[in-house]
Image 1 (cartoon, one colour):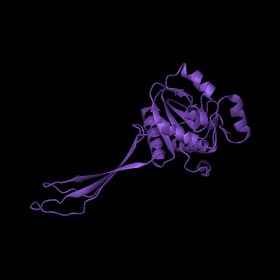
Image 2 (cartoon, one colour; image 1 turned 180 degrees about the vertical axis):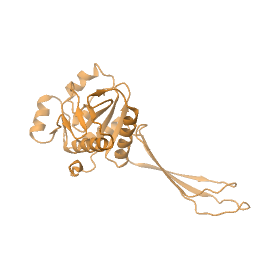
Image 3 (cartoon, one colour; image 1 turned 60 degrees about the vertical axis):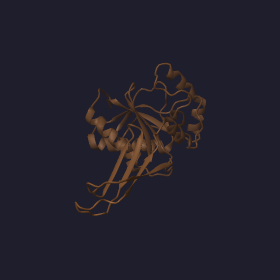
Length: 236
């Protein structure tokens, strides 16, 4: 993403601004914001502060088109139907996600199948492993890879489902419930806050985009094509 650099000149005559570095990342609001304030001028009460510059770097709002762009960047075409999905599995473009892994369980799937591209699978395992080591609680995966055919069927019962193609249609996205953990239904706000914090760290590292969905209580996660040859750290 291209950053927009805004240079703002501030004139002040009554106070001294101390040197400050502030960083704020809020993927929940779908913004990335980084600001850097620098002032090395020292003054006394009788002196006026000279004109100084403040550099603010603001990245554009993250939209669902950004999710789609990242999903499409992997070497997997739009998956139209089950036959095409099966052929991608046979060609090892998609890997099978086991029903249970370290720190996660997959719910009963009705409109998707337990496949992901390899990088996305490694990220799922990394997120769930970190969460499980902190809490001893398993995450509940509610959706993985869908065909376009199933996407259209899902839209009839779930208004959150994207119109047209979805990042789920490329094997790069999965949903983690925040109203169910393991086999236990019900929100846990401490776990929800921790999970969101973990996702924010991954987003800040450029590994994922995520959206906190409301009507269907889940985090929609799209893995970014940042390093296809990454190491599976969950085995370390």
